[in-house]
Image 1: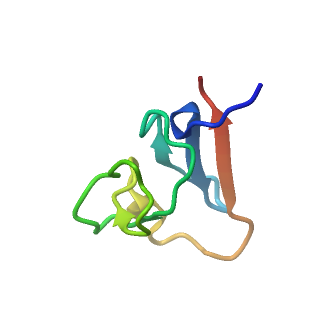
Image 2: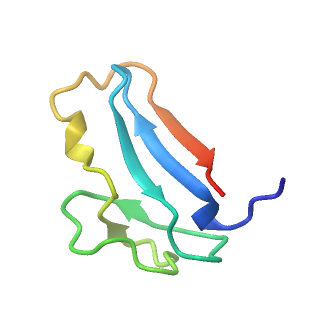
Length: 82
């Protein structure tokens, strides 16, 4: 099928050691384009439409990666959830 809405997606980041952090899922209704960053220290949750290039808090904490080795393959996991 054709999935053209941001809220159809679950996006996670997986470290080389297998730690998985949810970046976002089921956000922003019918928004189909986005431009934003993610930062645990950002003052706000993801605002919609996320088109301004600002940084927002991810839904899971990126701090889960603290202390892990950064060398290796990092995976951006994108799943269709509609």
